[in-house]
Image 1 (cartoon, rainbow, N blue to C red):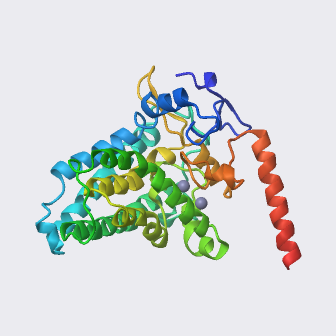
Image 2: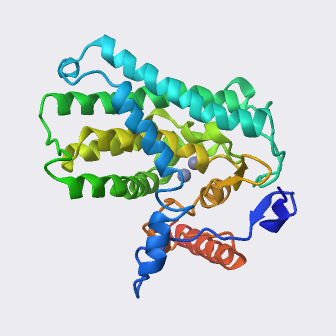
Image 3: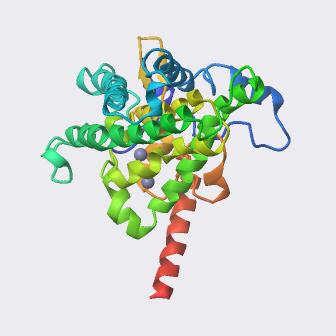
Length: 336
Ligand SMILES: [Zn+2]
Ligand SMILES: [Zn+2]
């Protein structure tokens, strides 16, 4: 596929999409009901994008890969190990497939690739001097076990009826609405956690590990310090406070576990065939890895726009970011 129809190349050969990241017509005035309906139900859109496959993974896991509730009433190594293995296997297949297609097979070369370089294979910044091996290590050794721990705690609470259990038959409208709200809840939660770990002491201690990846690839998505994993996956616990069905909590966990793949793919589009390419929507977060203090969230609610940190890749947004940086350094200098 000819990527020059969709964007340009910067000085270093990286792809810059013509279509800038933007917010969907959800929180807008005047309301745009047609645009909203098209975004909600159209393709590519809110449901018919990455959310549907992630939901189907959660649904299949609930149906076939989750132990019976009676078993999960008591914490025991056997069923916890099964959930850990299920999450490990799904993570390896999901991230591994994208990595294999884009970075091993290099099916589309650097077409649509934001950074023309490939991941480092000899850098002391990374464990094993290898970026991908480092990223896989943090994702599987820290990320999946901590995600599983949050999930297991939720199962135990649901199984023992320590928290409300909303059923489809009793509350069908809320049941469906909450599925649509899960990605938005996650985005607000991620924004809050993410702003917190950009506070310099926490950034140095915790979040700098994730930001070692300036040239991201799929496995970078879950390459985080255990402290960040603990905070990041705490979004699952939202369902201990908001009346939910366990499937909502499971969808939330898979959303947190799997969505970092398209977000860190490093490509604007993944070419499936010569004529079919899937948008990753990863450019805004790629800019976060490039410029650090922009685009903390990545979703429906215009949090970054409200708080002045939105960067859509345009020269105007870039100038705004530079002005903000200068103002911040002046404040820091005056405070010294
Ligand atoms: Zn990231
Ligand atoms: Zn960050």
